[in-house]
Image: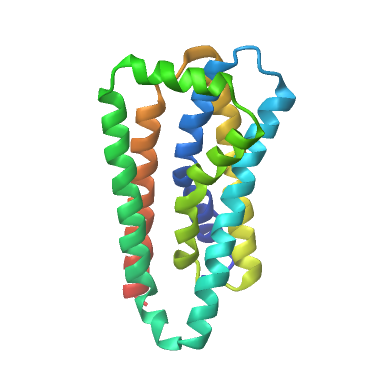
Length: 203
């Protein structure tokens, strides 16, 4: 991968796909605190964004080290990317479909927990919504570290914007979009996995 529009587009789309879980949680957080101030909204969105930047870089460091030691693993990276993003995206699709079928009682529970959101709970939310991003390190293993860092920062920036939007929407409309967001995120991740695989096979 080289510095190009495709690199930026892929990073932004990764950010959109990976941010959907955080978006759903942000909707719930906004619903639980209708009077939330802008500073608190920025702190919540910033926490999610920070984890979304940290996780891919952590995965890149781990996987890149392995690739340097065992160079033969490079040929398997497209397959790993396809399988991981396909699995993550499929999981998000299933969860999104289930969430749309669930009764309103679960959404009420999320709202109650959001209302009691503290620093510890926020950090746990950050980890829970970004853990999938750790595996993105496999998909960007062929990047040099400046590109990997740039991709992670782009993912974080996209996550921040999406979460701010989720918090604002949550304050206004509630969590009705949460299931659709997970479905959209799953489709995006699956599409990116296929694109990475096909591009590698055509080299």
